[in-house]
Amino acid sequence: MKALKIFTVIALFMALANTNLSATPSQDEEDRSQVEPPFVRITSRFLAQKPRGARTCNKYPRVCRVAGSPGPDCCKKKCVNVTVDRVNCGKCGRKCKHSEICCKGKCVNPMSNKWHCGGCNNGCDKGSKCLYGMCSYA
Image (tube, rainbow, N blue to C red):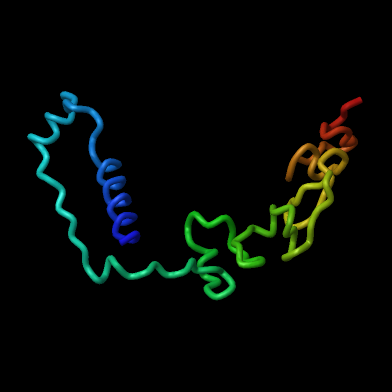
């Protein structure tokens, strides 16, 4: 008997939650109800199937080569680009230091590296030095 009361209370609560609290519909709702046909829910066995798990690159390496992928290489079940990724610079698991960035698969300090001054592939002219990320600062 107690279970019946609990079921009734839950059913009433759900019915109240689904009702529209406003007594009169707005003008937009009236226009939509006249133009659009009522929504009919169709269910099928195909739609009721559980979704498959995400395809990870350790099982499907070609996932990383799809357009829109973060990179063509697979490291720890994630697609990355080892030529620019600080956590996987040059190969999986090689981390760059805090002050370094990954350029062409090598960890470099952009504040002092002559070939990557201030950023990747930003080389200084002959005879100038890279200081504080700028060529010929002094």
